[in-house]
Length: 425
Ligand code: ADP
Image 1: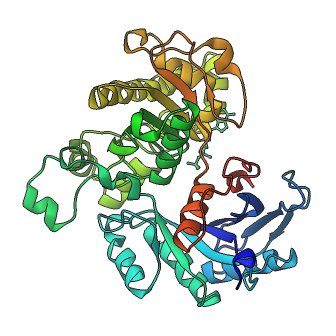
Image 2 (image 1 turned 180 degrees about the horizontal axis):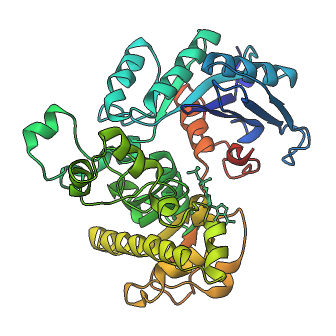
Image 3 (image 1 turned 135 degrees about the vertical axis):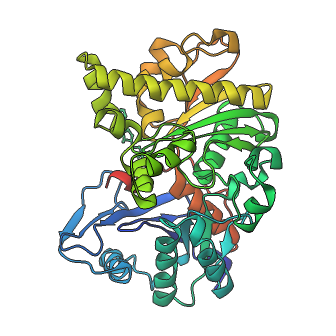
């Protein structure tokens, strides 16, 4: 194939336990050609929502179908069919690669990696430390390899950006032999987002990432903070699993581990029940019954005390991490808010830095109230540290990393196309 007709499209797949999210991007200009989601895989009420975007980002041609989709193989075949209807099928010569989000890469994978049998085996070896995520990611990879065995498949790991953490941040203070025997350490997650947002924040400041220290607050349904010094992660709030750290939609975040012994010995709960309690029934939903920040803020404004307590606990934890990472970094150039809550909830940003002028932190009420998809500064010009809102784009980052690895050029105008994220398709 000549240089000018080199394939430039990348399909990004994010395979969860019962869902597959996907986006097809053209890395020639970072435009999105289609986004979609298959959910409730394995149930009678599976649903596929597919939105072609080639004609524009408005999603006018959105298609939806419901009915049983038995497994991930059937789901990917259905996705391939939908793409083919738009002339974007997996057999297209314009498809350069498929990029897969893989949650856990352990210590081995610090970079995006072209998938072969050995890489699949290593991802499988990590299942004990990521039992909820890695099996689904692996199924997605295997199915995609079956559908297009000749096409490069690239695994992009959520943990990769955090492999630069120094040992004193990555290790738990537990018996070192036990820890090593069972690979127990802090790996961190959401790394693709932390990498993208910290780099974009440096860009927003007009500086080289190597010269900037940033605290990134990725506040979605899952939430994590990271301390990034000169473009390298030096600490992050998630640990062995995505349970540690901030208060999340349904996860407790930091907790005294003795709570688990107590629940077992005194409340008679099984390990699986405690796992479910801390991962699915805790955090905001456990505290007030809602995990959507919009709903919580609405209830707070109506004077609901449970919602107010949940909000205060959420903010208190966030402020503790901002303080801790200020100490870890020594000098902080910017605090960047991202993901669903971070990008949209002005009240969270305001409360997170309220009264922290001594740390150089403040928001300007008018700037903070602006809604936009663009990276923006919300602190007053007089503040010592920039507070910014920097929308994340994990799919674009996965596509860029995938394309770069298979011989493309990642400088292809990644800023130009942010429309149409698959998350809420
Ligand atoms: P994830 O990818 O972890 O599922 P997202 O980054 O998409 O999560 O964030 C989802 C969350 O963002 C929702 O649960 C909700 O709490 C919050 N959110 C989305 N839009 C708004 C908004 N306009 N105001 C406040 N919170 C919002």
